[in-house]
Amino acid sequence: LTGWTLSSMEGNLSSVEDKRSGWGTIALTALPAAVWGSTYAVTQLWLPPDRPLFAATLRALPVGLLMLLWLRRLPCRDWWWRSLVLGSLNIGVFYALLFFAAYRLPSGLGATLVATAPMVTMMMVKICAE
Image 1 (cartoon, rainbow, N blue to C red):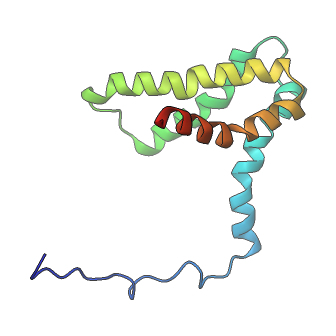
Image 2: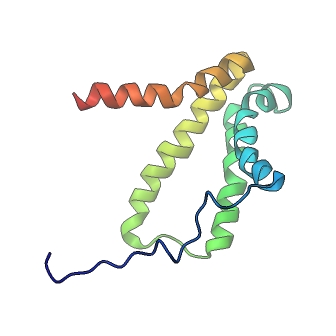
């Protein structure tokens, strides 16, 4: 690539390491993990018994509606089927299985199993990549 110069943005961007994190930033970072980790306890203690699909709907529907209000647009025609497949797998099937498990497993065991998901994913990638 003779004659080409790539300008660096390094001098224009502030470094992440230079900023000191306050307690507010740390709390904001910990909030999603705390909410996600409380799924099993909340499911077993406060949600109606024998209705895991209702519980999954209560968890996913409000966020979906808020996102729709925030973005104020629907997917274009090419993305409808993709949205249906991704939404069904990522939200529909996943939340249904998650809440069925939360109703049937002790909350500590369920939380521990979910915490192993990154390791299981890494092992599956290694197995499938060979």
